[in-house]
Length: 299
Image (cartoon, rainbow, N blue to C red; front, side):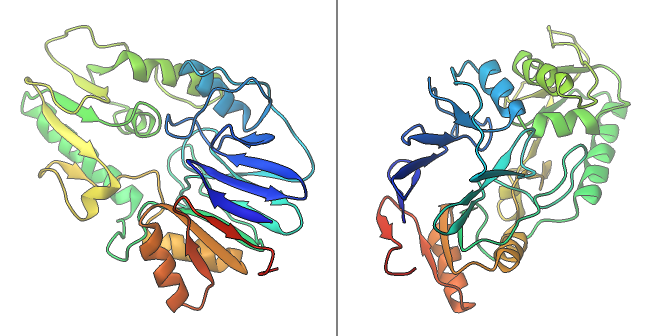
């Protein structure tokens, strides 16, 4: 078995080439529908049905869904339809994709299974990235929106069209004059078709009084509230909130311990830092940075 990064992660095992969030394999897996994980492919893909709907809503041409007993999809808790992949090959391999272990509104957190090899994202793989309680953060956001609206201010809630925007839609449930960007509306429609209870907020069309959910970062006639895990260390302003669809450092470490792998590969974000930390903790860990790692000798 070989695991390597070549503008995307690839597993080669027993004559099979498996592409992880890329279209370079004989079989290809799409973990979720964020643009940096999507690809167009005429081949059948391993994915959830929700990710396929979202991919097509984002104008990606993706083949039909493929299933096989060697491949097990696990809820990753990142966005609607996000999945981790457990591959049962010569050794079991768990590829996390982007994941979050916290329950948030309509999403259940990622619950990993044990595997021989763990390939994990490490976006927030440094000890300083520890996030506050989700429920407490939601209360703070609601209170701040209430203060601004009561003071006659317009409010821009800036968040990714897929992921944060839908949580923001739940947070503003009960407020008046709520609007969404047209791109958010498109994604919300897919969420509703998948059974997620979201209010069908109208698209903003120049109304003078508004609470607007949009990927835009700034409007001249509104107070901007922004939401990111990066705000844990470097908040953009006093109206920055720590809200993330990723796991924080403690949760990353907890996943490694639960999987209890023989080998860990880290990628994305602080991959090298987290691999270094895991080695101190006694794990055999390496960062995947466009180089091959032959596992033949290891196994």
